[in-house]
Length: 132
Ligand code: SF4
Image (cartoon, rainbow, N blue to C red; front, top):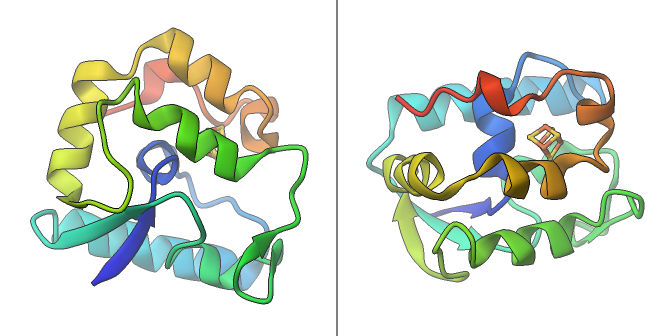
C-alpha cells in the first residue's frame, strides 16, 4: 500500500508542475495523476516521508527531511486534528479530499503553509483548492 503524508493532501491539490528538482517533479506529476485516477485505492496516512518524498533532494537516508525552515513533520502532525484524521490509518484519496473540503479552513491553511517556499512564491492559495 502507498504511504501518503498528511500535508500532501494540500500539495497534490495545488500542484502546478513546480518542484525541487527534475526527478522530484517527474515523480510528483506521476503520483498526482495516479491519485486522481485511483481515488478509491487505500493509502496509509503518515507523518513521515511517503512516495512523493522519495525523489526529493531534501530527503536524507530515505527518512530525514533537511528542509528545517518548513518543519514538514510538525506540519503533518498539526493538520491531523483540524482535518479530523488519524495518522497510521488507511484512507482513500477521495476520503482525504472529502475531509479537506469539509474541515480545511483558510486559517488552518495559512498557518500550515505560510513557511513553505511555494506559498512564498505565490503558487499556493486557499482560493485555488478544488476538491471535486
Ligand atoms: S504551500 Fe507548500 S505545503 Fe502548502 S500546499 Fe503549497 S507546496 Fe504544499
